[in-house]
Each structure stands twice: as C-alpha cells, then as structure tokens.
Image 1: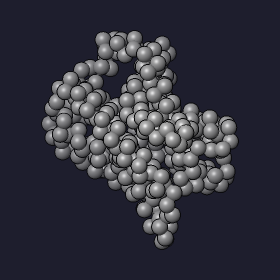
Image 2 (image 1 turned 180 degrees about the horizontal axis):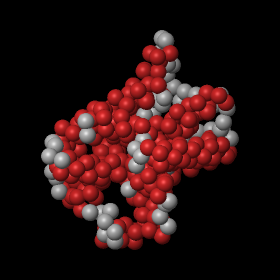
Image 3 (image 1 turned 90 degrees about the vertical axis):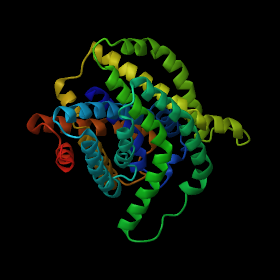
Image 4 (image 1 turned 60 degrees about the horizontal axis):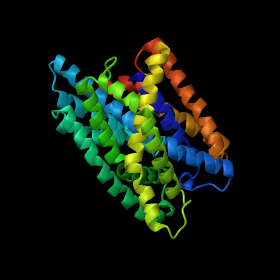
Length: 351
C-alpha cells in the first residue's frame, strides 16, 4: 500500500506542477509549441485523474484498517474517523489558501465522511456503488464542459492578496469537487471493498485476475483517455460537437480503467523488485510529502518566475521535485518515524 501511495504522489506532482508554475488558467490551455503540446497531452492521457484515483483507492483501504484499529481499541470508529476528517479539512484549508489552490485534502475530508455511511456494506455492494458513480461522473463532466469556457478565463476578483487566494481556492475547490468527486468516492468504495475482501493479501485471486487483465485495461483505457485529451484540448474540429462531448464523457470510464492498469503494473513490479524499506517508510508519510511537494513547487517558481518554464520542461522537473520531497520524508522517517503532518493529524483527531 505504501508503494502505491508513493507512485501516486509522483503522478499527482506531475499533474499539479503546471498549475503551480503557470499563471492563471494557462495550465488548462493547449500550448502552441510542439513539445509543450505533446507534454500536456501526455499528462492528460496518462496521469490526469488516474493517480488521484490510485490515491483514493488506497484511502478507502486505509479507512478499513483504521476502522479495525478503532474497534480493537474499544473506540467508536465513526467518531474517530469524523474527527480525522475534520482535522484533515483544517490542514487542507490552510494548504489550499497558503500553498496550492488545487488542494485535494478538503475533498478527501468531505467525501471521506461519506465512507461512514457505507462502511457496513459488503464488498460486492461497495463495488456496485462504485460502478454507479460512473454515470454521475459523466453528468458532472458535462456540466463542466458547458460551464468551464466562461468560468476559466474570468478576471480574478479585486481585493487584497489573502482575499484573492481564498476566492481562487474556493472556485478551484468547487471545480475539483465536480470534476473528481464522483470518481474519487467510487475509488474510496473500491478501496474499502478491497480491504474487506483481503485484496492486498499475498497471491489473492483478485490480484491475479487484475494482473491477467492488464493488457485489456491498457487496450481499452489508453484510447479512451487519449480521446478525452484530444476533445478537451481542442484538437477535434469545432463542428464535431457530439464527438467532443463523447470525448469529455470518455474520462468517466477511461480514468478508472487506466488507474486499474497502473495498479496492476505497480503490483507486478513490486512483486518482482520491492522498493527499499526507507522509501516504503516515506510512503507512510504521504500527507507530509504531498504538502511538501506544493511548497517546493511554489518556492521554485516564485524564484524563477511563473510562466518561465513550458509544459515539456515541467514534465521533466516534476520527477526530481517529487523525488526531493520523498527523500526528505524518508530521511525524516529514519530519524523521527511519522511525518510532522501525520503527527499533527493524529493529535488533532485524538487517534
């Protein structure tokens, strides 16, 4: 699980960095330069919404572990989890306002409260609930497709710097809840179902089935996500309105399918060559790594200038930046064990 978290953090960094490094809504616009255009389409096809779902899947599985731990301790699992989500929301608000308006922690906190309501469902029922999120996701994507062209390039509200940061964060939060919310909650449910069914046990039959399905997941998932990237990137002719809408919808099934392919690939590689224990330990501090990535990205592009680096270079920069955050928390784990934000979250939630 910690390895999946680490890989998910790298992918999330690749997706987030353009929105940290580029001014305004430039991260949503297909660049003119050929290499930058190719880089953006690569991120949209392989990374956007896929690694977020991987992380969401692990979040659902960790909820199952926390539920079991609370029961062993004689505590109320629901109360402990809701306190944890409240603490996560506080950290997320500060992160979204002060560091990166594209914060996902508040979304996790809001959607995570819903897990309390479904925690007693069986694994098959949770899988059916996750499947039901697909048409809802398609509907939400349609709403964004209709509304985004007007909203994305609107002028920011006047006011002091803090007010502008809060307004930017709130508008981004609303966008991300619609864009990612249904699929993320579906991934939460699948992660919880995986915990209940023992999916991560060595040589579990569903792991073998997922591994055998990898070629089909790639054959189906890659074209769907490429179609979505072309549609949202403006590569389809303007008169192809229905095809463009179909491309927008393609993300609803395409993102989970390709995320499942990434999961199968990670599990296969981990079985063959496990990560060093120091990196696995860093994965247990994913909250601190996630926030540190945003801090490092913000400081870096404050110094070099927003908009000074194109999409192609950002794709290259994202990997060492994510690696630096991971190594920093790996070193911290050797010295102090749990990361600073993990300690704070535990103290705030009373766990």
